[in-house]
Each structure stands twice: as C-alpha cells, then as structure tokens.
Amino acid sequence: MTVCVIATGCGAGKQATLAQKKTQNPFGETFVSPCQVYDTPQEFAQTISFRGSSHQRNEVQKNALLAAQELIRLKMRHAYKGMVSEYSSSIGNNNGNDIERKMTSAGDRIIDEIINETSQSCVRWSGVEDDGHITCYMAIQIPKGMVAEKVSKEVSDKLTQEEKDRIGFNEQEYRKEMAKRFEEYKENH
Image 1 (cartoon, helix red, strand yellow):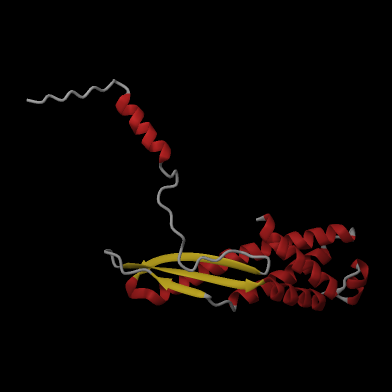
Image 2 (cartoon, helix red, strand yellow; image 1 turned 30 degrees about the vertical axis):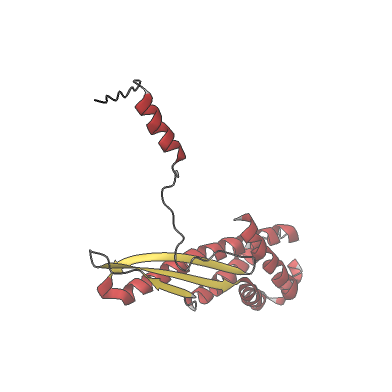
C-alpha cells in the first residue's frame, strides 16, 4: 500500500495565485482591429468599428463612416487651429482677432468639405452574432499635403490684399508651414 502525503502551508495557495496573476497580461487578450491604420507624417488616418443589426448593414456602414469622419475631423481641426494660433503669434498680429478668425473659418470650411467627400479605404465585416448584430470595421485616410494645399488656397481667397499685406501672408509659404505642422502632428500625438 502506498500512501502519499501532500503538505501545504497556509499561504502556499495564495502565493501560487499571486504568482499566476503577476504573469498574466494586465490588458487581457488583445487583438489588432481589421483595417487598422495609423496617422503618418503624410496622412491623417482613422480606424473605427460600429456594431448594429445585420438587417441594416447599410446603416451600420454609414454610421461607421460618420464616426470615422468625426474623429478624423477633430484631429485635422486640432492640428490646423494649433497652426493658425502659432502663425498668428509669430507674425505679431496685434490688430485684433479678425484675421485669425477668417483663417480659422476658412480652414474649418475646407476641412468639413474634405471630410464630407471622404470614402473608406478599407471595410471588413464580422460574422452575424447570436443576437443578430454585426460589426463593421472601417478605415479612412486623408493626405495631409492635399489638406494643406486646399486650406491655404481657401485662406488666400478669403483674406483681402490689405489683410495679406498686414500679416505678410504668402500662400506658398503658408502651405509649406502647414504641411510641416501636419507632419509634426503625428510625432506629437
């Protein structure tokens, strides 16, 4: 007859459990989203997922696109407003905020126009889940150079010649500076 004796101390079970927890991933199991894109020095990019009824795939896809557009709009506006603010302070526009407002308004209008014309660069779908829902994964990408070009043209068109002279506005220089700031946006965010 063989007898086995198992001896455990009072805290042994607790220590084993703590050791197991320390080696686990603190974020749980992780995955990369289908269509995953990231901002680069050349592009603003956004990946989004939207879940909804499999019977309304068009609505699910439309809502995914709208959500991606809104997030990328926020990035673009943030980058542009920072650019305008720094541009205004560097040129010493002490003549009021009228020119800065015109520049911001022109940029916002073009950003909205660009965003509204955006289409998806990638679309993937999940399977239909038990509750009848599906998930749409979507990516959109917008070239920063194109944004800089269109915004600087719009700003140039909106400012009067007197305003341009007052701040020393040069469309090509403004475009170059904006493209540089947009590239740096990736590095800083």
